[in-house]
Amino acid sequence: MSSFHPTHPETVFTYGAPGLKFGVGARHELGHDLAQLDAKRVLIVTDPGVAATGAPAEIAASLRAASIEAVVFDRSRVEPTDESLEAAIEFGRSEGPFDAIVACGGGSSIDTAKAVNLLLTNEGELMDYVNAPVGRARAPRHRLLPLIAVPTTTGTGSESTTICVLDVVSQHVKTGISHARLRPTLAVVDPELTLTQPAGVTAASGLDILCHALESYTARPFGSYEHKQAHERVPYCGANPIADMWSEKALSLMASSFRTAVQNGDDLAARTEVAMAATFAGLGFGNAGVHIPHANAYPIAGQVRDFQPAGYDVDHAMVPHGMAVSLTAPAAFRHTFQASPERHIRAAELLAPGADRPADPAEFLPQVLAGIMREVGIPAGIGAVGFGTADIDALVEGTMKQQRLLATAPLEVTAEAVAMILDQSIELW
Image (cartoon, rainbow, N blue to C red; front, side):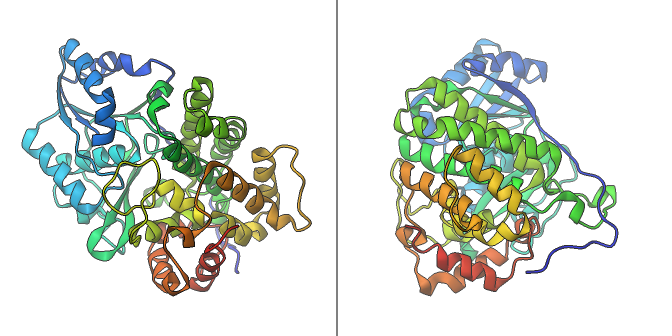
């Protein structure tokens, strides 16, 4: 694989983040937070499962008590599609105008809120803004409404990022919308909201945390790109010192608390550490970027036929995002080891302090990661969610459409390399 040798190397990296309020009970201060934004009428976006916990209704009641009108949309789809986002956008248009939006739920609800916010404030249709080559990659011209993200799962990092992820049903591909204006204004992270998260959801979304941290930590360094003009810079700028700091801390927190949070969901201390790890990983990858495992995850999720995961109350086939990301991660990190051996080894040490190293150092991180996956109940490879050798060509085609993500990989990514990674991921143990 070729490495990158720019003629005029980049000397600048960027860092962006939402405002952050973190801690048990933080959700009870939303009335105050919205009042600071002069919001009088607010749209709350959630999904049926989260609505059933009562949290969105509690938030709406607290806002009404603070003299803020709250309208609730509770039909976000777990793993959004272009069709589900268009339905949410239509609801927002018919019930608006609004002064602000509150997203309460996992990444699916937060991403739905981002799409609604984008199309309530900018002309055109959804596919105008979806990343190329799937969509037209148009940039929003107008500022969006203030968006407060209140995550109820620990993993996606959507409360910190500029990304909205969706399945485009007609093309059988998962892709996204990416622009700095999509980043939430404020993230309100209340670990108490994650106590209702089932073990299967905690496991899958926790693997998303791990992969966010690992991918951003091993991403192509920002200085390996050609120098860009200010208007050419994108939110994913490559590994950099600030993102590295967040990623390392996220890995350390997950090493100490992830298994406990999966096995004993009532442990608020463990839930708090995992929520903090999710926040830190989001602050890291939301700037450095992610690469091969996330690029592979999009077609895996988009082409699933009949797999239904434990812990998710859904009536459709689905590979949860974090699960889909993790299934090819061990093989992907084996492949990228040569680009930065010291970072891959350091990441494995953070995740498994004191663990014995294998004879081949390239196997260290894949072994540690696969061990964690097995321990928390993640399926044993893409074969366990319904894919086989005959599916690899279609999966490769879907991965190669994710050029925004692959551009962040520390090595040039070819279709042949992706096929090899997928083949090695059919059965992990």
